[in-house]
Amino acid sequence: MSELDLLVVGDVNPDVIVAAPGLEPRFGQAEQVVDRAFLVVGGSAAITAMGAARLGLRVGLCGVVGQDDLGQLMTVRLVEAGVDLEHLRIDSSTPTGMSVILNRGDDRAVLTAPGTISALSHDDLAALPDRPARHVHSASYYLMSQEFRETLPDAFRRFRSAGVTTSLDTNWDPQQRWELAALLAETDVFLPNEAELSAIARTPIVDRAIDVVGQRGCDVVVKRGKLGGVARVGGRTFRVLRPPPCEYVDAVGAGDTFDAGYLVGRLFGKDPGTSLAMAVIAGTLSTAAAGGTDGQPEQDEVDTWLRSLVVAEDTETR
Image (cartoon, rainbow, N blue to C red; front, side, top):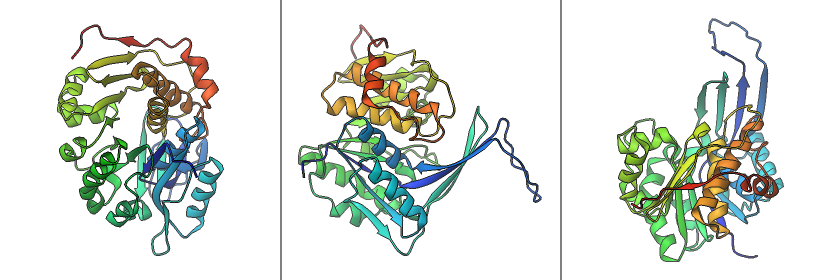
């Protein structure tokens, strides 16, 4: 088998999405009728892996699912998407994790039962070869166990010593400590959203926050939702300010598909501005369907929008 382009490490779980305008759950055994409900592929790692595979990379996934119906659902969907599951472990003692997403249009609440999400361990990282792929991406860092988080910097260091590049998308830190210095020092590309970046750098000013985080030595690529995205790569700053128009359904998993778009561009040898444009296009188009994967674009769709999307580069270098 040829070498994988990308190995994604992290959470593998289904999402249940319940959607209605102004949704507010009522207790007291009150039954409510909602517009829609979906059972879809979830987990940031799984969504990123599927998005990158759909865009043409050879992708593997390292995670854990339970020996149950939900675990089987996830493995079937991932195999259908062309994701290699050599490093996916089935845990017979723990149920597959699950998230319930209450989506009211302008905002959403996420309720997660960790299950096998937090079962990914030091042993799973140690079992990976020194070069499991050309690039290793870690997702949902703060949903992982403390043991996993403590050993990930060493694993990244081992991969990089073998010529592998690395990237990280933490998602939100529930404890809001943002203790990432050791890991960012071993990370080539950091992919936060704007809120996460501001929390880490302790400033709401995006460019200042990028300066702070970039001092760790990593490239910083920031998701900005309707405002597009910005990337600081090797001292050069690129911006996409106007995402492509899209008939919006929900933004579940859009940031993970953004990650997939950027990593695909990078691993296909595209310049940073084009990679950022691919990220914005992929993330935006994914919002046209419910859940994180049903709206993920194919490469030809991304290429169509690349012809018209404007990427600006700052004239001042940093």
